[in-house]
Image (cartoon, rainbow, N blue to C red; front, side, top):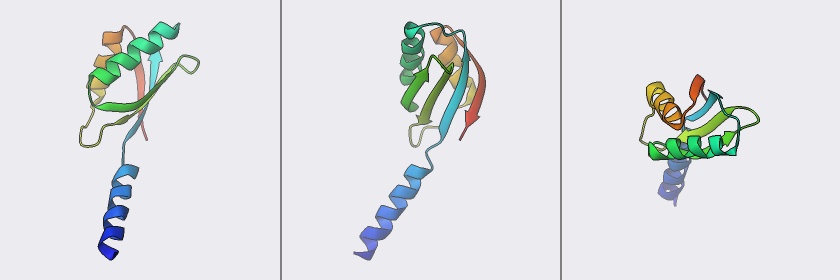
Length: 91
């Protein structure tokens, strides 16, 4: 019973360590922009829980556990969608 509790606690701790990103994106004007950015972030296979806000001009996502995502990879994915990542915030 104690071992199960310890393992469960450790697993929850690792989930809490998921790195979250908030990326300012320039050039978005419509829903198609949101779809394109979401598609390219998914294609990296390193981003999950992706949400793109046209109103705030931001992309929000978490790293897939065990797969680190660099600023260059984020900028490249957003550029491939046709936009520019102007600031990347890690949380």
